[in-house]
Length: 312
Ligand SMILES: [Zn+2]
Image (cartoon, rainbow, N blue to C red; front, top):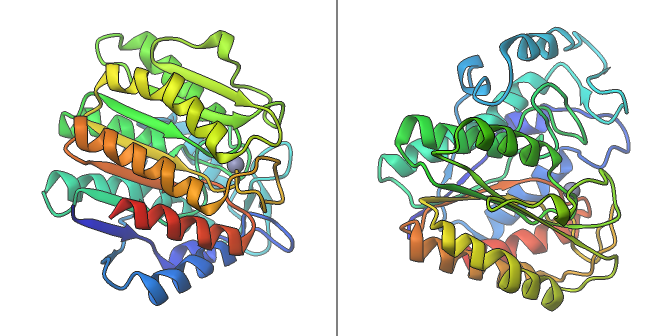
């Protein structure tokens, strides 16, 4: 399977200020990894997503409101909690972060690649239709899913989110889409620590196409994989996706500072290998993996190494 990595120096210029966990060092760390160990995988540059692209998930006036908040110097907040920080270089990073998934999608459609890993930031899975949240501005995964349906006739798109936090934004956007378009539902599955911010993603709200599983603090890799085998893979196999999009957060790692699950590098490899198996079975191998969380730099590097080794 042909794989490419999508990344850009623009991701380094989204400055979130001192001591912010979602910082440019995350991408610098991954750039070292790619340089040292993955020279066999081509690195491609994403295009800048347009307003038309972003409006697949977000109203145009919301896009312009966010653009208006961009500071000429220093920092500005985009959310009430003060976690979504904008700096002068942020817009370029935000539009390229959305563009990474879309460029990968275009390249898959053109037959250039089958699988993509997008080393992009800011992440996207907490971003709701009109609400930036949890370091996320626009919902990269959902926009890519909608573009696959609208532009490339890949109607059955499954988003699997293994970030330690619930992807409240993707969940809400998917439910809303599925209500409006019952003929082409998007599939969303999330495993996340619960209770933990954002305190959503309860299994009692599950539908055929939106499956949330909350995991207690301390859950380890084999326990997490069992949840996938029992609850998520059967639903995914029944859905038979044309394309698999991964919201790849690596903050379920045991060394991550923001949460309390106990995954190790080889657990990310095992989960990735199982997801690759499902993509090979139903989706002609097509996977777009989008970076979400992962805030211990060494753990992020070693988890992405494991993820990519299972990927190619
Ligand atoms: Zn997270």
